[in-house]
Picture 1 (cartoon, rainbow, N blue to C red):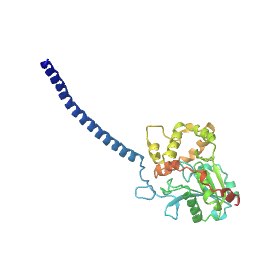
Picture 2 (picture 1 turned 120 degrees about the vertical axis):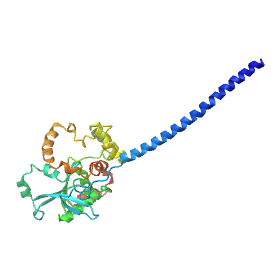
Picture 3 (picture 1 turned 30 degrees about the horizontal axis):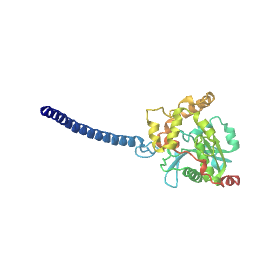
Length: 315
């Protein structure tokens, strides 16, 4: 019995001895795994930071940037705005218009949109139009710290330097319509009138009934819905989202014609026929300072003051 007991104790001891090396080995593996996961996580964060960080713009006139070919004015903060004039001379004009181009466009868009406008009408009505590249587009300097207010004052500065007088008209096409709202808010005393052509809206405007904005939002292709969600909720991720290849790109940025109706396509064909001549100029300073900042820049009607309507009605 004693011998049997001795054998059992020896067997238990043997099993205990065999477990100890496995515990040490498992602990080493666990330690290495934690280190690998930590290094991998740090590496992922470094990659994510670089992927989400946009490259610096290639500013026109800089050493590595495109050449300056347009007429430009220097604003009060030192930036340059490129512009193009159309119609009759300023000194004889009856209607002086500042045209605001849309998304993925430039100062030359007004020529495409007014291609069918009769010269007789321009002359008889005394129409003068100045169209400028919004910051980051075409040959206008990027403005990394721009706000909804700053572009309104850019327009006022441009008008003063060109001698447009105390009042002028503003016309915004597509995304340029958001700029018209800013002018109505911040420089209403300088406006003789304002017009919006097929303006873009902010689907998160609190003043629009949620069922209406939701219905309009859901009519967009899924990739466009996601692009707007990212710009609204995670603006710091806008550059990565619009350059990644894992998910479908924005149909607007990729110029997908399927988002337009047949009637729109017929009109756009005429528009794009003229646009081909200057398409390369639009994004030449970089897509982030032009296209992606437009996604991130969503005007909110909620910032209007209570006295805004009265200030407009008094004009």
